[in-house]
Image (cartoon, rainbow, N blue to C red):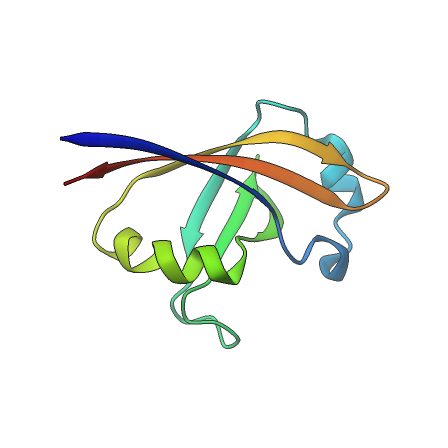
Amino acid sequence: MTEIRTNTFDIRGVKFRNTSADVAALKSGDLVNLTREPTNEFDPNAVACTSGGRFLGYMPKELARYLSPMMNEGLKLHAVIKQTEPVKMLITVVLVWDKED
């Protein structure tokens, strides 16, 4: 049985990376690529978020800790921009995945 789950999260590290121009260029509905970074020196469960070739930041650690083992096993995740707030450097993403029992 396939179960479709969703999760909404704010991309982390946007202010730290000072990607304000990239945030301003995003719009609701844009696709977000999620890439595992198992060799990340700060977090072995890190999941990088990019869109249109632009690095945006990272999935929150708590969510990455849960999803990264499944991503390592081939879980396919789909993410889209829900909203952006360039002044606050905030990107909210909706994440959808299929989980087979």
